[in-house]
Image (cartoon, rainbow, N blue to C red; front, side, top):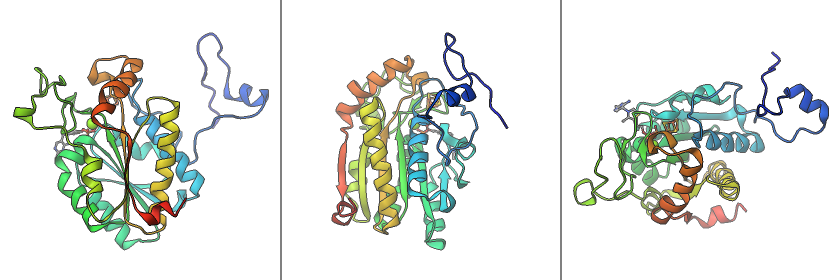
Length: 273
Ligand SMILES: Cc1ncc(C[n+]2csc(CCOP(=O)(O)OP(=O)(O)O)c2C)c(N)n1
Ligand code: SF4
Ligand SMILES: [Mg+2]
């Protein structure tokens, strides 16, 4: 079906057909993403992370053998947005489902996509034990420092002093505990082969994140154990910020607590290049 929706701003509305007629295509949706419009709020970076995963699936030629395990959270509907096989996990249980899928179908590429509430709160046991067992799955962990879907409650990753709907006076570490640095924790487990933290707040960090997604999938293809990419991601709606302000908040407020970097890269992963 031809899609004639305008794709440019109001001053320059032209159809995709007109753009193609003008010359070379410089952007197109990855095959691994469906044509569906997402429900994400303006400025939410869940969509960027979806795209990076879609591009990596295309580049590795694994669309026909990939199974995603969707979480409960704002990305609960991601099975509409990807054109790969997928299942929906109960809240926090994605690593357990992925374990079963990968063990019974080792030729498939299995990934989970989980928010910070999903992975670090209700699903903390599942991710820790899956990593400790060295399950050969890839985990994409979207840390936006709140429970986005349920209207911005405090997550295990909310920052000290951060105001959320359930911490209106700010996160008090003496009462609520300290924000959990999940990448560092999981990197300490022997079954984890590749654990890094990235972000998507500008072109440079997006490029770095893309490379990490590729390495995570390659780690799984080589059978080396769990791979996890944590993304520092925005939630402008629940942070009560504009999209631009939320990207700056990631850079200036989240990154100092959650440093970007590589926390575990096994020698065999380094050898993948
Ligand atoms: C067993 C269970 N407990 C609680 C909920 C309510 N709930 C839905 S989404 C969510 C938190 C989601 O936050 P996060 O994982 O950080 O994802 P985000 O929406 O921020 O991307 C919670 C607590 C639920 N759906 N199921
Ligand atoms: S509530 Fe936050 S995480 Fe959820 S779609 Fe909106 S901006 Fe994204
Ligand atoms: Mg969240």
